[in-house]
Amino acid sequence: MTPILASLLVGQTWYLLPLVVAVSLVYGATRHELPREILLHAYRTAGWLLSFMGAIFLVLWVVSWWL
Image 1 (cartoon, rainbow, N blue to C red):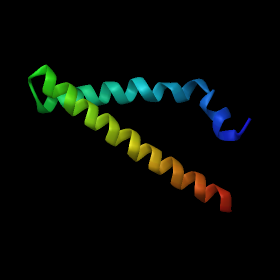
Image 2 (tube, rainbow, N blue to C red):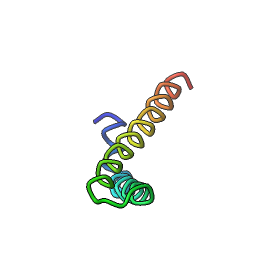
Image 3 (cartoon, one colour):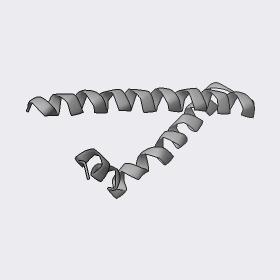
């Protein structure tokens, strides 16, 4: 098994999904009042957060190859 797949099996990694959902919903609720708008904003925010964290992960992974 590759180290990346092995790291996904670590229990702490799975805290990322509920944390992103909670942060996205709270952030969306601070910007809008209607449930549909809150969910749309939360969806966009979750995508942005996961993309940003994924980009950081890839940069650190590539840098680790040279260390």
